[in-house]
Amino acid sequence: MIFMKPYRLKALLIGEGSFLVAGILKGKGLIFSPDFIALKDTFTIVKQCQEFFCAIKIGNIYLYKEGINVIKKFKDSFNLPIICDFKLMDIPDIAEEIISIGIENGMDGAMIWGLAGEETVYRCVSSFPGIMIFVLTEYTHSSEAISPDIGDEMAKMAVEFGTYGIQAPATRPERIKKLRKIIGKEKKIISCGVGYQGAPYGSAVKHGADFEIVGRSICQATDPIGESEKALKAILSY
Image (cartoon, rainbow, N blue to C red; front, side, top):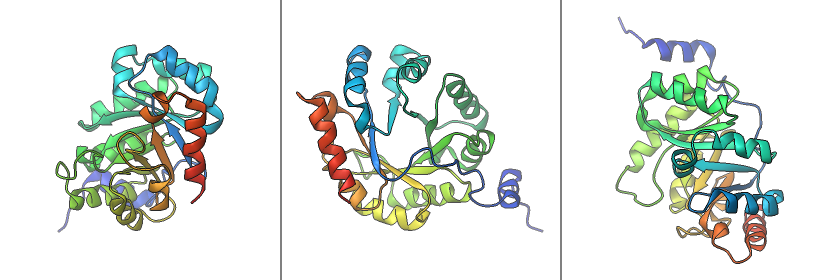
């Protein structure tokens, strides 16, 4: 007799992809990721450039430095979805609690590692059906830390448990192509590593991503408005 783990059985009974959130992010676009500048400077940039942004990604630097209520500060000031890049890689109970705390503060989406395992991914998706859950597949800085085979398995996990989408590295466009084939057309791919880390604007979308995440190239620009417009124009050209 073959026994199936309870969470896999539940996912099978509910149906693949049934937890998918309605289109909070639509079409193609630019996600702003401020990490290395003061919060007041970030707010200045967003006020100037929000017409070019479809969402804001908050990373652990802000979450640790400013506290979890930084999410509320963004939500109270701007009409943009907030995605928290928790990089969660923990047991299901802890991951679920962290997602819950983010939601209490106004979070719209979260990024978690597929390496945390099937049950963690399943619990984060099934417990919070109104939240965009993205599975992190690979790093942007090194192809050695996580092999392409492992990245592929994490993308398959995202499909099986109905996440909103995945993260794929813009610094390795061939991986975006492969991961798009695995997850199909419906799920969203957001790509880090655009701009400062070397991937040209528009290159991730050209190879199959839906949204490009840009941070330091905009934050460090002498003209953030012009830089944001430049990035979005390149993204929308594909």
